[in-house]
Length: 587
Image 1 (tube, rainbow, N blue to C red):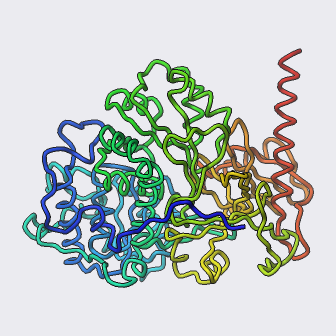
Image 2: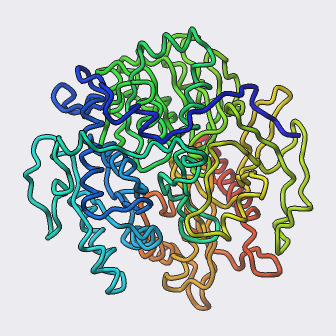
Image 3: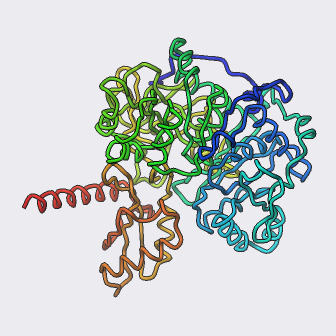
């Protein structure tokens, strides 16, 4: 059975800059800020007028420097006041924005640069610049020379002056900005013609796959525009009374990374569309988040489950005034209702109701969510957003060598299976990867999410697990196949498989390793493997769930690892370990 949204709405046919700013030249407010540096909000902020003008100046400069429509721009940086300018400037120029996790290792960054094949690389100074230079040096000579000529150091010092030196032999990005006069004359593509917005890619947001390194998800102008309108309508506009009140008082705090689809949609999309001020933090720090909520009277918080856990359990939380928060949502991974209720108790009874939503990079950001003023009493992720539809399909046979779609059938209410979704926010496909696209998108437009879910008699959806092998660590995706490869490069390892294991409501990577003959299965061996793998992995990809030695790994006849069996084994092991600790504590 297909479950459709009860809302059907219209969407403007235009580019993202047109949705956010209207025309390139119409008057915009210049007397109040829309983007603020949280450290110096009184002096370092952008109004809607100056935000558009800075982005136009960058767009004009990029075009003059050789950027063509459809060219990619890689951005390797933490959040800062001018990160939105980079995003919007690239998009206005007709380019394709592609953000990177600023904690990437050399190998991880080199993969995204090779795959996206950018015309420009923007990197923050300091450690990101060091990693970026190493990544470029690891490439073949012809690629290395090209990328070195088109790599610039970026940050928000440009707000104060264009006159800053480069770093480590690379130029500062001020040379890419056109003058104010040239910027004010710049006209971006409105994309109002038939299918123009649907056929024009806006961003490559990289999503870890189940069979190797991350893949570039092609998100179009239509995808972004529709998802912004959907999110806006479903979260508030379908209730006119709530909508008017929320627009009057809303303030957002951005500590989620702006290279991530969720942060882009909320803070560069929805907030700008609704003219909601956004206070930008460089990176997440829990106590600083609490301080900023109190200082700026933040009204809306969008969190990931580990932060909700901290909110509920951190001893410092109750020292801060969080009374301004009227809406708190969680996404990126499942959250138990018990943890939600514990966090809700920070407010007077009945004041706060934490809701969950569901989305993925392949649906731009969001596809399932809650309506305003509907109380969540369980761990549901809500209903389909406007113009979206979902269905639950029988699971494929993991022991089989191929997934024959003809054997899959639709399921009804309260039956678990794979969640398939369809809507105008579904991606165009994977960048230069038709095979992966065909494996994920059906000919009639259904996206196979790889998540195990079900819906109840009211049409509310629940995420029960993941058919995909992805591990989600604090909202970040980790591909087990990549971790397998890193383990296999370690001394003494004959075979390896990584899975996610939930410990204290958070998912952690756990490695199951078959050692070579003669290598002892000791603590020292595990520590050596951990040290060698840590040197090649970002912090969130490391084996915080443990390293376990086994005699063999479960596989099907063709050699495919049966990870579901390992996940079940891992969870039983963790439960046993926790039970043993409780017994010892009671003695």
